[in-house]
Image: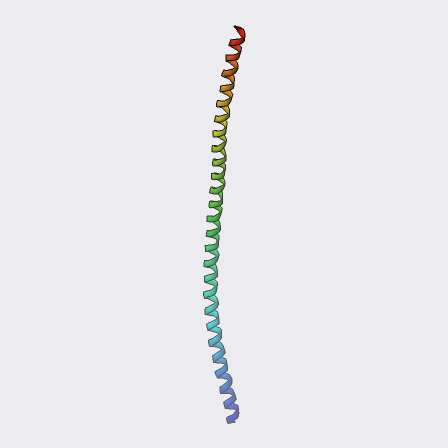
Length: 96
């Protein structure tokens, strides 16, 4: 009878230990889930920031290309105006 009592006591100790281990694992799981949620939020925020920065880069590139085009356009218009003036001078000389 003592052997059965010892076995029962051993089973109870092991069961208690397993319950404690299960509780500890559940707490750790909850902590890891909370950390995972936090990391997902941080990732989503970083992705949103990256999308905003990518959009700003795109806008800046577009603005620089337009800026460069306007300078080139002004240079081209000035050259055309110079050519028109020279042609007008030539026409006036031809009429004389």
